[in-house]
Amino acid sequence: MHDARSATTERPRTGRPRTLHDFRLAELEAWVVERGYPRYRARQLYHWAYQQLALDYGVMSVLPKAMRQELQETLPITNLVEVRRRVTDDGETIKFLFRTEDEHFVETVLMFYPDRTTVCVSCQIGCAVGCSFCATGLSGLIRNLTPGEMVSQVVYAARVARERQRRLSNIVVMGMGEPFQNYDAVLRFVAIVNDRQGLGIGTRHITLSTAGMVPFIDRLAEEPYQVKLAVSLHAPNDGLRSQLVPLNRRWPVDELLAACRRYVAKTGRRVTFEYVLIDGLNDDEKTAAELARKLRGLLCHVNLIPYNPTPAAPLYRRPAPERIERFRAVLEHYGIPATVRYSRGVEIAAACGQLRAHEEARRGRRLPAVAGQ
Ligand code: SAH
Ligand code: SF4
Image (cartoon, rainbow, N blue to C red; front, side):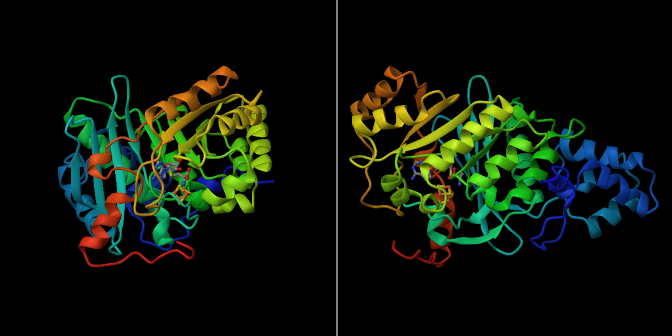
């Protein structure tokens, strides 16, 4: 049986240097005590890192100078550098591009809504899953992000939200990468951003989105964190889904939905299904009715995402608005709640994996093609 604690006490396996953003409070306490400082200094550090959102030890005037000096030399707060920021015309969506220490690029999107402020975080550089419609998958997987690199994305976003007198309220792990292929680091990230002494983002306001890795759905159901689960379904049958999401061959639709039913039974929490609508492929009424049948009796909500054109799939098209509405109406007719969600920030290349691809191209790097693309 999986021990839930292991996910949050384990050190990241990527071998990258640790930053302040990788530490849980108890570990930071041990760290400061080991170096001869009183334990309470760790709380002060945590406060400055997460309540004040400091990215520089210089401003932490409450700490002794010698300690700040030592921190500066031995423990960077973050190893992400912001290299680009784009804002939509309405100002409601902001996309960040960060450079990692090993010269890769990570995307993060901050979205302002009337009732909440959400950050969309990446958990990997690239992605190994290779869904046919997704720009991130084009490069394959370069590496996992560390918990600290994920926390840093949230801190940068929270700082920008603060400039507008907004508090970051929600996190969705729906940027680049498949969270369940970097499970331990993602769970540790959840623990850090959830800490009441730190950012204090409630786990019910944190969503993990998976392309359907069945064993990890069961594992998540056992965790003490009440995070929300989103599953990228995109099709109600194996013929169609295997074309879109290659890992469907390993975990077919019925197995995936059975895992979702177990998850709901175990946690009492609703599952969100994401469904990218692609013209003429998975968007007809018959497919909608088939989807409704498959989801019958499952506590869920369907988010219909009209396909966002990317170089990954130049032949795919977004359906006409009437088709999108018709699909939604069929689901509703069968009692399946569904909402149409247009991706935010298409004009600033905010859709999954696009800004990074632009930056790589600008630097003259070509992303390696995926077999069969
Ligand atoms: N790997 C995870 C999370 C990141 S992708 C997953 O697949 O769930 C987040 C969401 O963006 C997924 O539902 C994915 O299907 C969707 N997405 C990716 N490329 C898209 C595109 N070109 N148009 C619309 N949605 C897209
Ligand atoms: Fe990976 Fe998600 Fe993109 Fe599929 S949709 S390639 S799982 S990031």
